[in-house]
Amino acid sequence: MPSAKQHAVEIVRTLRERGHHAYLVGGCVRDLLLGREPADYDVATDATPQQVMRIFPQTLAVGAQFGVVLVPMSAEDRAGSNHPGAVEVATFRSDVGYSDGRHPDEVRFSGDPREDVQRRDFTINGLLLDPATNEVLDFVGGQKDLKAGIIRTIGEPEHRFTEDKLRMLRAVRFAARFEYRINPATMAAAQRLASEIRQVSRERVRDELTKMLTEGRAKHAFELLDESGLLKEVLPEITAMKGVEQPPEFHPEGDVFVHTLLLLDKLPLGASKTLAWGALLHDIGKPATFRVAPDRIRFDGHVEVGVKMAADMCARLRFSNEETEQILALVDNHMRFADIRRMKESTLKKFLRMPGFEEHLELHRIDCLSSNGIVESYNYAREKVQAMPVEEMRPSPLITGDDLIEAGYEPGPRFKEILGAVEDAQLEGRLGSREAAMEYVEREFPR
Image (cartoon, rainbow, N blue to C red; front, top):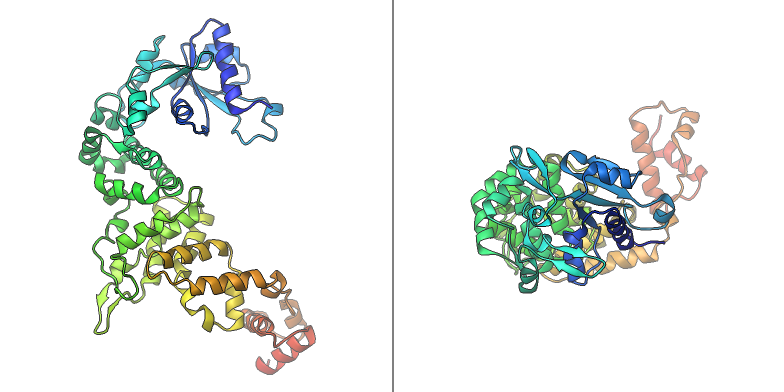
């Protein structure tokens, strides 16, 4: 089956056969030059959207007013492929005005690729590639910046950032992802305009931050966010961690901000979104609960406060209900591992069978490695999970509400209490049959 690259190259070839100029452009060219596999491919051409749609009848006109259409793979070629199935084809253009800080007020189509690249964000993303000859067209010094490891805007930084404020976050993300330096003028412009990031939709900010957290360089990304002044604008709750001391006997590494950065440094490339945000927010309640007691620094109730703060943040950033539930569960349960050896058997089994428990386990591991380094509770939990069959952690219920009704119990809130007590006794090995369970109910919960 054709690869994503072959699909894009075929689009370029077809456009040229019809008398148009066409090139691979943007991030895919950057990644190919770096020896990386591009996530997707884009094509730039002098063909107008209407001409592209005539040449490729199945085209999806997702942004034709801005000169952008999608050319999908055929269903047959797409079968079994991880490729999203469409290549973005954009007409050479210049953009005039960005009143909303994201979309151009006016688009003027062009026949000149030199004019087209001037509207793009960073020099390393402004390269064109002729796939027939492998010749790179570089009108902005992108190859030089790739070799030097520099993130630099095309043209005047403030102008580029004013056009689309999200570019400030993208500068940070690219610098962290590739371990590049941000050009001083580009960084200075971000620092001056940092407060304007608030004009960007929360979903776009969330998605950019999530990429920073999951692309394998999260610690460096958040250091750059802090340096640029963007961190206090998008996540003031994280900035509040700076300077919040911790008891050195448990946290020899330093304050809450330092501890959190150390966790982020241990997030692997491709970490799940929920684990990454759980790691970032697990101690979010500490600044608000900090106090110096006679014996040591304490953070009484920081988990409960942290869950509420994390819920507010997830709502603000518009996470899905499912994502929010897991992120809050990670914050809510991260301290419970300290008690794992003292848990009743029923409590332990319920703990180990929590949804997404592997993420809870991994958060605990990197939390320990980012503080005192003691991982005994992690090892104990992991051994228990591996040794315990699923049916032992989650056995079939011995009785149901119907059984209680049949025995003459009145339906109501008490059912939850009764069934919960029966399940606990079952998990602890004290009950093993329906008959024994009903005898237990009759004895402990008389009608």
